[in-house]
Length: 91
Image 1 (cartoon, rainbow, N blue to C red):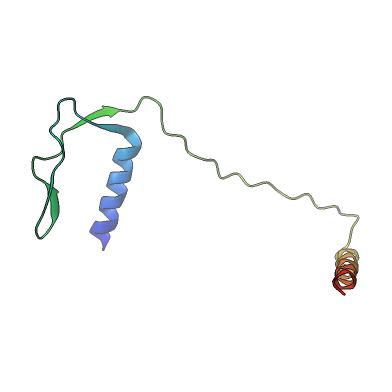
Image 2 (cartoon, rainbow, N blue to C red):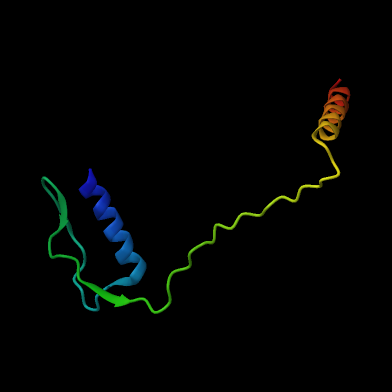
């Protein structure tokens, strides 16, 4: 299992740092099957180093501001009132 995870990480590192394209004049890709699936004439690729790093999304999370003048019991009463209004509208 460790080797399987290691292959995934290694491939992810390669894909992040390099661009892969079919080589100019490469023969068409023909697949053969047997115990495994593979190409008959290999896979000719042109590999170039990426100049710009890939876009990595930021995981910044917004923070909530807490109003110190409002207590929890005040909010509980507001929620109870909203539920009562909702129940009245459903009836």
